[in-house]
Amino acid sequence: MNAKRRPILGRESFNAGSQSVPKRKETTMNYIGIDLHKRIIVVCVMNDKREIQTHRTFSNAEVAEMKEFFTAQRPFEAVFEATAAYDWFYVLLDPLAERVILAHPKKLRIIAESTKKSDKVDAQILAQFLALDMIPEAHCPSPFIKGYRVLVRLRCKLQSQITSVKNRIRNILAKSNQDRTSLFTKAGRAWLKTVKLKEADRYHLTILLEEFDFYESQKKRTEERIRAYVKKAPQRVKECLQLAQTIPGVGQVTADVVVSELGELERFSSQKDVCSYAGLTPGRRQSAEREKRLPITKDGSRWLRWVLVEAAWTATQNSRKWKRIFERLCERTRNKKKAIVAVARKLLCVMFCLMREGRAYSATA
Image (cartoon, rainbow, N blue to C red):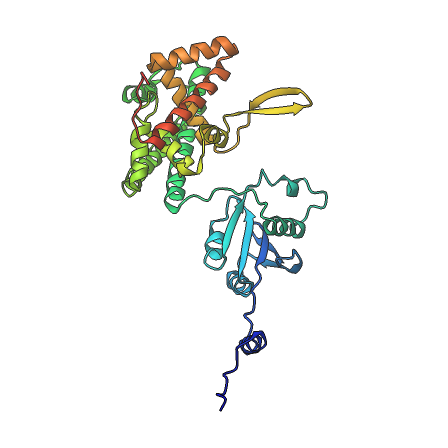
């Protein structure tokens, strides 16, 4: 009596069993380019085949409608240019998107140079570049660095206003040949009350002194707020502030500006990258075998360049090492302004290395 054989699970039976399991639906990624303005945003949605799905325009007041629209596009990646007022929009998109990218406006020149310039075209080009993974990214600093930067820049602006008022006061006094040093000390302020001026000039001087006192008060309050803010800083930020101030010519103000403007040091791979970010590297124009060196690019933060140049002047006056460097550069360039910019660049390189490596400055190093 032959035993009944069990059926062998061959290819046919395996396929038959697999057919009973429903296939998993593959989700496709959407790529959204956004042209962000102060009052409106223009949106272009593309699929992974770079086919346009939809165009939409929203008023910036339509926050609920925006959130509903972007939720319906999930999963998606989004890109928009890093303009001055993007924070609110980044906060809106970040929880919804797989990835939010800030595009570097200056590096994405194809939009600025487009012959068919429009908000709709700009959004479409951004979406295409995102789908191709060709977006030149801008850095998005941490929330702490953002707040730190706001306060430090405010103090710089107040100092700029104070300097402007001082110059206008000196101009009034110069008209009657009564300008002198130490005008803004306690003794100088007492002398200003007694100086003989024309009636109109006296009134102008009074207004300017009131303006001077106002900005000084605002600057003092801002300084107190910065010091309180830094107390809550990550330990890495506190260490960088201390290490930077071991360099001659670098005080608290310079350290605040440098640390807040550079942000996370890990994003820079070299000294060249840091100098390029600060706009302290010379531009170049090359044609065939000829190469022409141009002035510094002046990209990035003007506050960072300003404070580094000021620190460079102080360093050359207080350190023999930096004075020798400055003198050698003066001989080479025959231009003091170019030489001091070169010193500022070297100073930034030294500061970057010390902060990255976690060691104090040594004049013999």
